[in-house]
Image 1 (cartoon, helix red, strand yellow):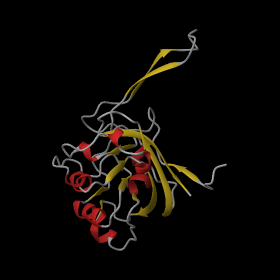
Image 2 (image 1 turned 135 degrees about the vertical axis):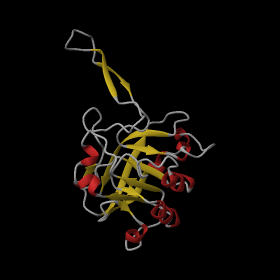
Image 3 (image 1 turned 60 degrees about the vertical axis):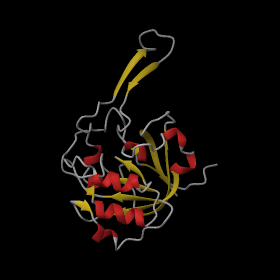
Length: 213
């Protein structure tokens, strides 16, 4: 029997809601055999980027020599989590985070206007979205969180090719969960379950992410 009273699916639906980050390959699903066409079974083939839709970034994404995703135990992706509502419509800033309660050892997920406006699930990529500043990222690392989640496709401001926020978080061994949709999730405490595919050497993976309590 499910011990959770409420479960929120915070994942995007691939093939309908995801946008393509500029330069990444798009998601494709092809039918190999079809029951409707007389095949003996329904079989699909996927073409997918490791950073497609709702996905996890691991340190290997930017940190040379970091282990692949298969090296992490499943428990690293099942964490106590706090959803924090962000009022700033431009960025998650240090100034705003200093007034929030962020606990060591779990995940913090930032709910911004990216979710509330429907931007994250619109299917079209926008260069303007609420991002996470490097100072706010340093605060998260210093606070001892294990995972940071944001409701858009990158924690960095678009156009900064040095990706400072990624480097701060991943360099501090903080995993990143991107492109989550928190529109229906109230601020508060949950259990995050975001299991990636177990792929040798991979730096990232799409996930089916849920919040439960």
